[in-house]
Length: 120
Image 1: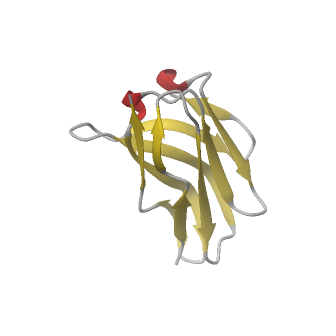
Image 2: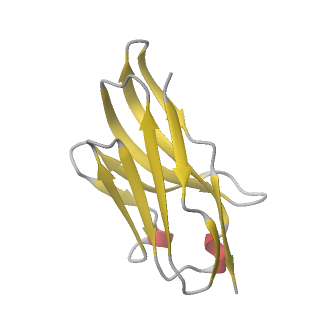
Image 3: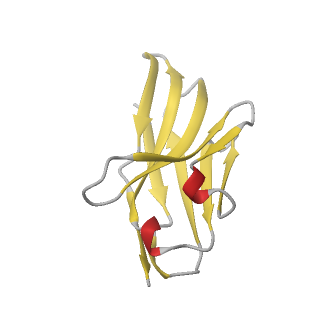
């Protein structure tokens, strides 16, 4: 059973910073992509940033230059450094591990979500 445990969310003022972490646990042979998505009230879940096992990264246009995704493959942990936060960044942030190879096959997994609230 694969679990993703997120941490680091909270309340911050506009212009502030937060760092999210997501650690994968379980009997895992490999993880292809790890990333962050977010869902604001009344909106669809959207991609924030992803990082592949080869080191390539991808960001939503709305966060480019402000957010940085990084990954520790040994610890199976992905981080999201969020700077210059804006009220529109307020959302529940979800971690996703994509194409996770376990004894049960290859599947995607999601974390439980962590709330990020940016006050104006």
